[in-house]
Amino acid sequence: MDNTALDIRQFSFEKSGVTRLTLTDFRNYARLRLNTHTGPIVITGENGTGKTNILEAISFLSPGRGLRAAKLSDIKRFMPVLVPPHDDYAPTEILPVNWAVSATVQKGDDDIEIGTAVEKSIRESEDESRSYDKRIVKINGQKASSQAELGKYFSAIWITPQMDRLFRGGSQSRRSFLDRLVFAFDNEHAKRTANFEHLYREWYQLIKTGRMNDAWLSSLEENMSSLGVAIAAARREQIAKLNTFIEQEPDDVFPNVILQLEGKIEKLLDEKPAIEVEDFYRDMLRKQRKNILYNDTVDGINRTDFKVFYRKKRMPAELCSTGEQKSLLISIILAQTKCQTLDKGFAPVLLLDEVVAHLDEFKREALLSKIKELELQAWITSTDPYLFTSLKNEAQFFEVKSNQLIEKSI
Ligand SMILES: Nc1ncnc2c1ncn2[C@@H]1O[C@H](COP(=O)(O)OP(=O)(O)OP(=O)(O)O)[C@@H](O)[C@H]1O
Ligand SMILES: [Mg+2]
Image (tube, rainbow, N blue to C red):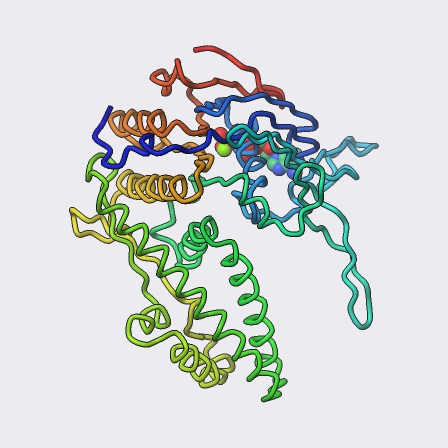
């Protein structure tokens, strides 16, 4: 065993994870049923067989848009059909079906039935009514009032190959990543960020289209500033929590990181009480109305950047190597996992898509041994099952073939 400073096994927490998974018309799966344990699960198969799709399905048991942030309409099973007389493939033939994911989730001694699917809803406006896809959630057969309800029973944290660009790309994906870490502790954060975006879009459109109704804009600015300051405060709290936690962790294979927020509103909260920062933000938005017409830049919480540093090297993450960046990401995810487990009393499920790519053998083995130590459910995908032989006594191994998962021993 390695010298993890905080051995969370000293604390009692409930066993948790998916024990039965059923997919219906979900991407490449017409129908899939799977029984799983609450330990590590390794899914292997050739490229394009459906490994990531399984992880995406599980991510829909938690609130939000899933691990690919996909459009709901892209998920339903698509079947190209042959069109006579030349048997050409029709470009976008989608079966008239809706997708569904259902699962039994274990939490301590309880089994909870979770189901999610899409439903057609009608949006009425002054001059038309339009139908749109809406994700609905059922918990133990009852329709949940909001997706946030899921957070009581199930939580998932993921690492995907797209996140290899997290530190080098634009700040939007880092903000979304951080906001997801905050949601896990604070359900309201998801609603606040969605509301802020909605108000921001309305405010922006009003100005851009020249409808400068001062009373209307001022009321939007008032609401945006109070939501914005609450969002900034929640982000600061999360960063502080993780930094404090990480400081006590061993600075080993997955190196210690320092997390920072670079944003005007977050910084002002260091100096002034929240109520004054709200006033400042409201005035700042008002002053920036003209920026929308001239150069499209609006400063505020939608510009904040989430910065990560490799502590020992004093190096910003964006200047680290690909393998180092992966290790820094794993450090953050492991800290978040432990914090969540201690806070909620049950561990999140880890969805690790091609996580060992870019890791050398030493780091790969260190990660697998951390997964064993944490005693949680981790879904791991790869094209090569033999990279995981050290989990052969702990993990369930599945191979994906012909749109089905076949359990194998290695
Ligand atoms: N809506 C859909 N309907 C049917 N098939 C889909 C749909 N969306 C994606 N697919 C297909 O599902 C297949 C599996 O995709 P997935 O991303 O899960 O593969 P993978 O096993 O993770 O591959 P890789 O090793 O390349 O990451 C792909 O061939 C993809 O084209
Ligand atoms: Mg994949």
